[in-house]
Image (cartoon, rainbow, N blue to C red; front, side):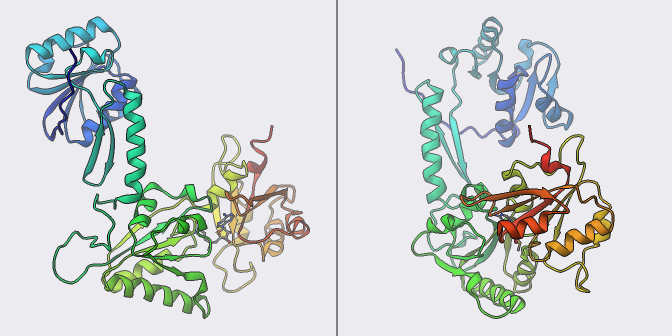
Length: 413
Ligand SMILES: C[S@@+](CC[C@H](N)C(=O)[O-])C[C@H]1O[C@@H](n2cnc3c(N)ncnc32)[C@H](O)[C@@H]1O
C-alpha cells in the first residue's frame, strides 16, 4: 500500500548530513544543503570539479573513499547520490538500522525520504512533491514560481503599499532600488530586478527602458517618466534625484528603472549619493549592459580566444578634441582589443579619424548595432575607415553601440 508522504521543513543548520557519491546528482544536491547550513560529509572516491572546489574551500568535509557504516555516526540525514543499486541499498540499509532518513537518487521507491522541487521567495519556501514523479513536481513548482514572482515581494510578503522594512509602527520607511532593466528585450531584466519592480509603489523610468516591463506594472503604481522631465540634462537629473528622495521619505518603495546597467553611463552613482545624503536606503541591482549585450545580439563576442584579450567601453558623447573629453583617444588607438563606443554616433566621424590618425588600421572591422535585442534591431558591418560614412548612408540612429576590433568577424563562418 502506498501512503501520502508527510511534508516537513528540515532545519539542518550545523547538523550532519552525509552525501554518498560525488557525481552529477551530488553536485546538484549539495548547494541546497550548504545553503541550509548543513554540516555536509561527502563520501566518494572522486568528486566533480564543482564539488572539489567546495571541498577545497572548506565548505564541506570530503572523505575520498567508498562508504563505510561509521560514516553515518552523528548524521541526521543521508543522501545517496550513486547509481550502483547494490551499493545504494547497502547505504540505505545502514541508515534504516540507525533510523536516519535516506534519500535515494537511484530508486525513489526504496527511499525513506524524497526531495521536493523547490522555489524560494525570501523567507517563503514552496516545496512540491509529485507523488513520486519528479517531472510532475517540477512542472507544478514552475507554475507556482511564476505566480509568486508576480504576486510576492522579495521578502515573501504580498506587495501591498509596502512597508519594505517589515516595520509595523512609526512613520513609514521608504527606500529606493536602482534597477538595471537590460538593453531592450524585456526578458533581459534580472530576476531580482523584476521582483523589485512588482513590489514598487513608484517607478521612475528612463527613455531606454523596455516598454513592455512598464506594461505589466500594477495599475496603482505611480509611473514617473524621467525622460519627460523638462530642463537641461543636469537640472533634469536634480529633479529625478528629488523625486526619488521625496517619494521614499514619504514612505514609498521607489524603483528607479534604468536602461542597461545603472552604473554604465547611467548616472546611477549620482542618484545613490543623493539618496544617501537624504538618509534613504538604496539597493543597487546590476543590469545587462548594452555595451556587452548589443555586440552579442549581433553575433559579436566582445572577447574571443586568440583574437581579443581585452575590451574597453568608452562614451563617445563628447568629441575627441573637446576640452571636456575625459577619454584619451590616442591611447585607445594603441589598443589591440575590442573598443565598444556608446553614445558615439554623432561624433563617430571625428572618433574614427582620431583612432586612425593615432595608428589604428582603417581596415579594422567595425560594426554598429542599433536598438539591440529589440524587434527593430539593425546591424551594420563595416571597417573603421568606412563606418562613419556607412552609418549615414544606412541612416542608423541612436540608441546604437559601435564595436571596433577583429572580434567583429570572429564568428563569421
Ligand atoms: C546613457 S547610455 C546608458 C547605457 C546603459 N546604462 C547600459 O548599460 O547599456 C545610452 C547609450 O547606451 C547604448 N544603448 C543602450 N541601449 C541600447 C540598445 N538596445 N542598442 C544599442 N545601444 C544601446 C547607446 O549607445 C545609447 O546611446
